[in-house]
Image (cartoon, rainbow, N blue to C red; front, side, top):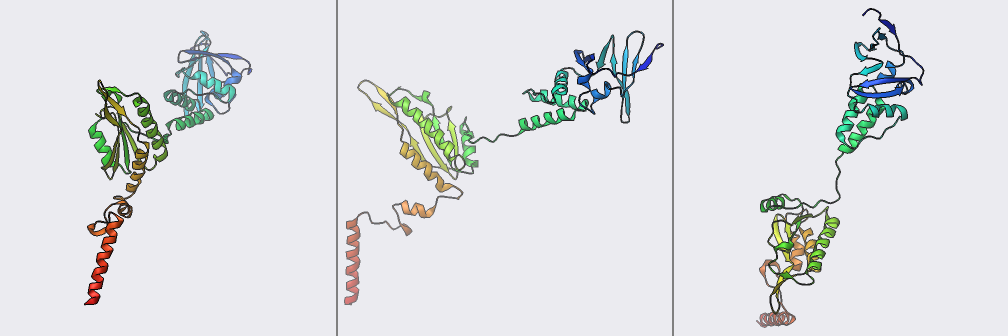
Length: 314
């Protein structure tokens, strides 16, 4: 157009400029825009580019970066237009002012800020956004995980694929047909609390699972090793009152703890420790029944002694 003249934008740092970034309007100083060196905005407003103005007040900004030369900014009626989304341009300006800026919690917003930071060649802000994304994408390893079983098939699959012994708590207060005794609710809570304590204490050696949806039992513990159930502790019983039946929930703490410790017999082994099983079994080697009392042992010793004497007499 006739009347065009070439000039550059290189004003006083305190001079204000008007920016239209994708329809979002901002008002800031040249000092803020040029505060961080080697950025796109610093190049725009430090006189490193030619500015074309015409008699109608249209302003056109051209910038040369490397070998890429293109006219990417136009401003009208005193507004400098930047053809980018203006959603996060306020974050860009705040980083220029303070050299730091709090990032939003939303991962999508951080990714958008990262894209804008790269476009404006703001390395510091880009690094900040990348670190924030890395920290949010890092997988948190919980101290203890307790899966909830929702079907019989899911239970079978979990137990079959378990690499450690399994302790399962089946609990459903609503399966009761009768009224509870006075202490049942308290004992039900004690069973739940003990399950949580055991899961926290032995979570690295035993799998703990809970079924609170489908079981017919009100409160029952099951113990598995090598994909087979080796013990069960049922905590409910029916008691008879003068007028009706009641459901009683018990808390056999010692028995539960004992079976949990027995689970370690199946830890990292194809089966339980045979020596320990023989030591705690009522049967000895070779299927021979051990003595059941001192009197029987004494009678056997007498018989074996008499047989010995008979052999000597011969």
